[in-house]
Amino acid sequence: MTAIGESLPHPNSYVDLPEKVDQFSLPLPGLRPYLNKNAISRLKYMRTECEKILNVAGCALPFEVFSSADAFSSTHVFGTCRMGLDPMTSVCNAYGQAHDLNNLYCCDASVFPSSGGGESPGLTIQALAIRAADHIKGLV
Image 1: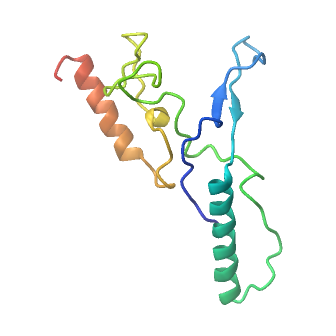
Image 2: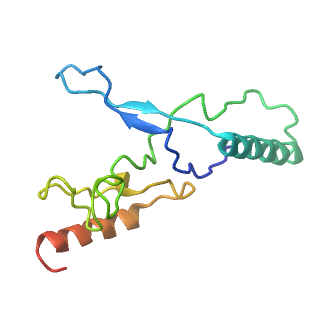
Protein backbone atom coordinates (compact mmCIF):
# COMPACT_ATOMS: atom_id res chain seq x y z
CA MET A 1 0.00 0.00 0.00
CA THR A 2 1.19 3.48 -0.70
CA ALA A 3 -0.02 7.04 -0.41
CA ILE A 4 0.65 9.82 -2.88
CA GLY A 5 0.62 13.48 -1.90
CA GLU A 6 1.58 16.67 -3.64
CA SER A 7 5.11 17.96 -3.21
CA LEU A 8 4.65 21.70 -2.91
CA PRO A 9 7.32 24.02 -4.32
CA HIS A 10 9.89 25.19 -1.79
CA PRO A 11 12.91 27.43 -2.42
CA ASN A 12 15.17 25.01 -0.51
CA SER A 13 14.23 22.12 -2.82
CA TYR A 14 15.91 22.34 -6.20
CA VAL A 15 18.03 20.74 -8.91
CA ASP A 16 21.51 22.04 -9.60
CA LEU A 17 24.52 21.12 -11.71
CA PRO A 18 27.38 20.28 -9.37
CA GLU A 19 30.91 19.44 -10.53
CA LYS A 20 30.09 15.77 -11.26
CA VAL A 21 30.03 14.74 -14.92
CA ASP A 22 29.01 11.60 -16.81
CA GLN A 23 31.11 9.52 -19.22
CA PHE A 24 30.54 12.17 -21.92
CA SER A 25 31.75 15.01 -19.65
CA LEU A 26 28.21 16.40 -19.35
CA PRO A 27 27.17 17.75 -15.93
CA LEU A 28 25.02 15.42 -13.85
CA PRO A 29 22.03 17.05 -12.17
CA GLY A 30 22.01 17.05 -8.40
CA LEU A 31 18.65 16.58 -6.67
CA ARG A 32 18.39 18.75 -3.56
CA PRO A 33 15.11 17.79 -1.87
CA TYR A 34 13.94 19.59 1.25
CA LEU A 35 11.12 18.64 3.58
CA ASN A 36 9.67 21.41 5.71
CA LYS A 37 7.39 20.86 8.74
CA ASN A 38 4.29 20.80 6.54
CA ALA A 39 5.74 18.11 4.27
CA ILE A 40 6.85 15.98 7.21
CA SER A 41 3.39 16.28 8.80
CA ARG A 42 1.76 15.27 5.50
CA LEU A 43 4.02 12.20 5.19
CA LYS A 44 3.33 11.16 8.79
CA TYR A 45 -0.41 11.56 8.26
CA MET A 46 -0.34 9.45 5.08
CA ARG A 47 1.63 6.73 6.84
CA THR A 48 -0.80 6.70 9.79
CA GLU A 49 -3.81 6.45 7.46
CA CYS A 50 -2.20 3.60 5.49
CA GLU A 51 -1.50 1.77 8.75
CA LYS A 52 -5.15 2.22 9.81
CA ILE A 53 -6.41 0.81 6.50
CA LEU A 54 -4.05 -2.17 6.71
CA ASN A 55 -5.09 -2.82 10.30
CA VAL A 56 -8.80 -2.79 9.43
CA ALA A 57 -8.03 -5.16 6.53
CA GLY A 58 -6.49 -7.60 9.02
CA CYS A 59 -2.81 -6.75 8.58
CA ALA A 60 -1.81 -5.77 12.09
CA LEU A 61 1.90 -6.20 11.47
CA PRO A 62 3.22 -5.46 7.95
CA PHE A 63 6.34 -7.49 7.07
CA GLU A 64 8.18 -4.36 5.91
CA VAL A 65 7.63 -0.61 5.89
CA PHE A 66 9.33 2.00 3.71
CA SER A 67 9.27 5.76 3.88
CA SER A 68 9.37 8.27 1.05
CA ALA A 69 13.09 8.68 1.75
CA ASP A 70 13.84 5.02 0.93
CA ALA A 71 13.54 5.33 -2.85
CA PHE A 72 13.24 7.94 -5.56
CA SER A 73 10.59 7.24 -8.15
CA SER A 74 11.15 9.06 -11.41
CA THR A 75 7.76 8.21 -12.87
CA HIS A 76 6.32 11.67 -12.22
CA VAL A 77 9.16 14.15 -12.15
CA PHE A 78 8.04 17.78 -12.40
CA GLY A 79 9.69 21.15 -12.42
CA THR A 80 13.15 22.54 -13.24
CA CYS A 81 11.83 24.60 -16.21
CA ARG A 82 9.01 26.57 -14.59
CA MET A 83 6.62 28.37 -16.91
CA GLY A 84 6.01 32.05 -16.18
CA LEU A 85 6.23 35.66 -17.28
CA ASP A 86 9.37 36.73 -15.41
CA PRO A 87 12.70 35.40 -16.75
CA MET A 88 14.17 35.85 -13.25
CA THR A 89 11.72 33.35 -11.72
CA SER A 90 10.88 31.10 -14.66
CA VAL A 91 12.57 29.37 -17.59
CA CYS A 92 9.92 29.61 -20.31
CA ASN A 93 6.81 31.55 -21.31
CA ALA A 94 3.22 30.31 -21.62
CA TYR A 95 4.06 28.56 -24.91
CA GLY A 96 6.98 26.65 -23.39
CA GLN A 97 9.44 28.89 -25.25
CA ALA A 98 12.62 29.50 -23.26
CA HIS A 99 13.12 33.12 -22.23
CA ASP A 100 16.80 33.04 -23.21
CA LEU A 101 16.69 30.85 -26.34
CA ASN A 102 13.90 31.57 -28.83
CA ASN A 103 14.27 28.24 -30.62
CA LEU A 104 14.08 26.10 -27.44
CA TYR A 105 10.68 24.84 -26.26
CA CYS A 106 9.90 22.80 -23.15
CA CYS A 107 7.02 20.44 -23.89
CA ASP A 108 6.91 18.19 -20.84
CA ALA A 109 6.18 18.20 -17.10
CA SER A 110 9.28 20.28 -16.43
CA VAL A 111 7.15 23.43 -16.83
CA PHE A 112 4.91 22.53 -13.86
CA PRO A 113 5.80 24.13 -10.52
CA SER A 114 4.48 21.14 -8.53
CA SER A 115 3.25 17.59 -8.93
CA GLY A 116 -0.48 18.20 -8.57
CA GLY A 117 -0.89 15.34 -6.11
CA GLY A 118 0.27 12.34 -8.11
CA GLU A 119 -2.11 12.11 -11.03
CA SER A 120 -0.61 11.51 -14.43
CA PRO A 121 -0.41 14.75 -16.45
CA GLY A 122 -0.18 13.04 -19.85
CA LEU A 123 -3.10 14.88 -21.46
CA THR A 124 -1.95 18.24 -20.09
CA ILE A 125 1.54 17.64 -21.46
CA GLN A 126 0.04 16.75 -24.86
CA ALA A 127 -2.05 19.94 -24.82
CA LEU A 128 1.01 22.03 -23.94
CA ALA A 129 2.99 20.38 -26.77
CA ILE A 130 0.20 21.14 -29.28
CA ARG A 131 0.07 24.73 -28.00
CA ALA A 132 3.86 25.04 -28.45
CA ALA A 133 3.63 23.56 -31.96
CA ASP A 134 0.89 26.03 -32.89
CA HIS A 135 3.08 28.86 -31.58
CA ILE A 136 6.04 27.64 -33.61
CA LYS A 137 3.81 27.48 -36.72
CA GLY A 138 2.63 31.02 -35.98
CA LEU A 139 -0.98 30.05 -35.31
CA VAL A 140 -1.16 31.68 -31.85
